[in-house]
Length: 87
Image (cartoon, rainbow, N blue to C red; front, side, top):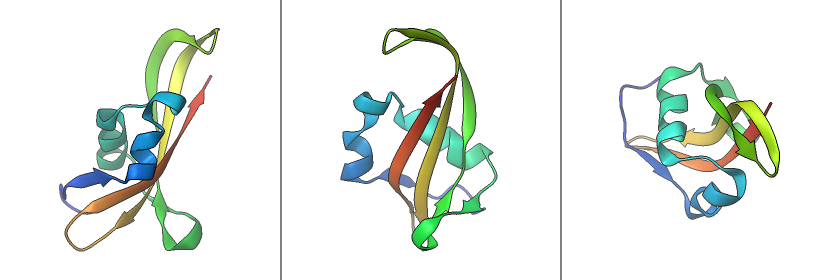
């Protein structure tokens, strides 16, 4: 994993923040603190669980998992999309 390169969310990723319920800080924390794995199309991914204990879409969940898919470029990390899972 690279040392603290700037992390930029693409317009596509940012467009899903409300719909999927993640924050930019959660995405950054997941990238900085989680193990990176290979993803489709030569991209990378990681995931991190966050304590949630809230309602999402009318149901209570204890945990939110944030899974960013990103590209590690020379000068920055570009987040292509972010998936969230609630359980």
